[in-house]
Length: 185
Image (tube, rainbow, N blue to C red; front, top):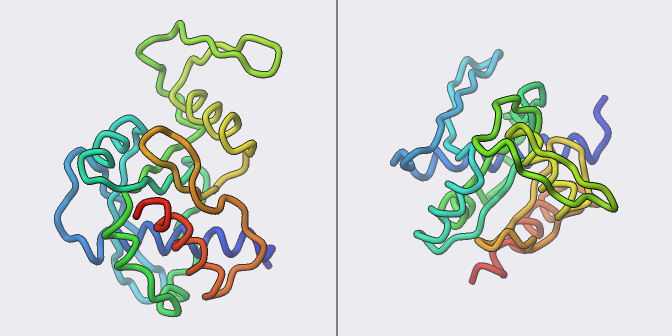
């Protein structure tokens, strides 16, 4: 059985990723479509997200939206329990108000500029891969390194809303979503 926090993260990430397709049928430019087929119902669910933070920021500025960041990985499940989505009423709100950035921290694709050095604590760290870049960003800004992690940022890469969760029920999910909306409005 999943721990309540992990289960909630899976549920809410599924909600966010599912919602961007259901209520916005237009394919966002340069976005990647993710497809999930439920093994029990065989329903196909599609969602769109940017796999590059800079591209997500560009479109967030263009559309005047905040960014929902999903720190994940190729081996991390963000699909979760699709059947629980029916319990939440916020899907349309998410699709209309946020740009989704799916950032795999284990992406081994090399950075174009392989000479990126960042100060981490009291030592210099060389960023070699895209995953290194996203992992550093997650650790530096949110002081976390677990996946999946959901959070809201503005177009200046500053955290907004809530980034930690205590309970996951309908009220907690609504509170989390609204915390990102308040900063946007």
